Image 1 (spheres, rainbow, N blue to C red):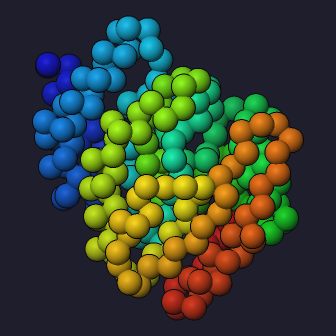
Image 2 (image 1 turned 180 degrees about the vertical axis):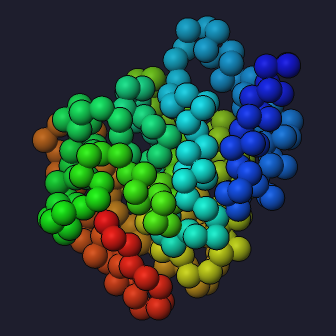
Length: 227
């Protein structure tokens, strides 16, 4: 239990000066979060690998200050290949060709943005510009999809509640999401795109999502994203 409390404290400390601290710290310090961490610790001790590491799960909050969120990319779960995950949804570590999802994502990006700042696969530059890159399931079992979906649902519910307190967000939902209907702020604009393909060579039709997001931001008199 001491390890659990230490992990909770480390996660809470990551939220300081991010704008997310005031509300999320209550959940992170709660028995609900203890249950999440106990489950993850039990899996790790049973040689059931999960990804990303606990050190990286709060990167979306650390890099994208709460008050600066303009756009939310809502993705179901991280990559199941642990060598790719850096904690940000869609963003990858390592060679792009190893990830069919990011490969398709990047091809579509280049069609709309000839020289994007995220050409390397690391989307940190977007997060720092107000794009909240969020996996609704913060961790996943390696090579076993959707095993952690219920585990993180209460936490993601808290995050969505916080996002509902902000006005004029552009919410981009990738594939199906059980949280889509929980965005109840009437000033938000929800855009849906298909999920990224999981097989090499798969095509992703985003319906010009990067251009559409910026168009919606301009309509709201908000500075567009430099992708």
